[in-house]
Picture 1 (cartoon, one colour):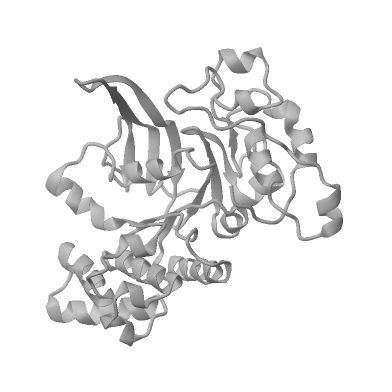
Picture 2 (tube, rainbow, N blue to C red; picture 1 turned 135 degrees about the vertical axis):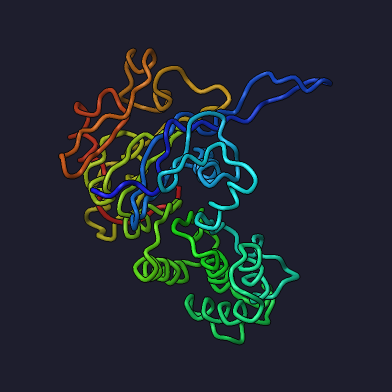
Length: 346
């Protein structure tokens, strides 16, 4: 990528205090996001995957400033927005929007679809009452809904239609960057494909940039240009989506891909699995060194003593960053154990 990044995350940290006792003294912290760095360039889709509890949603909310960061910074379109408050943040916020996982919970049940979209236009001071009504109809048409949807309430729509309304509401602010936080998780598989195609079409038509969070690795591979793998608040691996699926360099990535079924029954019956032992450790008390070492069959004493940093093991034109001390040694073994197609729910 030759253009400057639209979003740049630098050593981002978000901790939640743990308080106990009558005086509610802080006795620790949940390290939900713990030193994450990456860039998203204009027009790019970055996929973000990982197990439940890995910190994906917290990271997304911190990036768009629904949460204040504990440390680190978020640079949006060349401006550090990490400490912006009041009017300064309201100036930036329309350009950063979010589509949530549950479209029914994120829509006001007492507001019609048209009112929800017009509210976004009003809050962001876009147009006057007359022009807002016309713009609302345009947005509904843009996401594939008929004009009659204007005066209907959320409970009158299907899950896929509600998610289309949520997308239209996000587009009302004319954003450059949209975070889709598990936007497909509450939908049927057939509807998921429709929403993914809609997001792709909107990206090309409006020049949008996405952070796409999902459990379905196949869907991420299809939609995202690059994919980042998050484990216990830190990035384990980040690379081009195709490169990551074909040649994972981190044992955690290989385990996620190994869980994906392959359509060919011959390959499915003969391929090796990467089986993880145990559960994700407590984010309030993560393991020393490499956070994945307690579940990794390749772990050594070095993994307990020293936390691995992201390093580039890819080509010059296609960086492939991995945080693993033994990535070179296990590259071949992981490749044999990982499928190249399919999707999975983590």
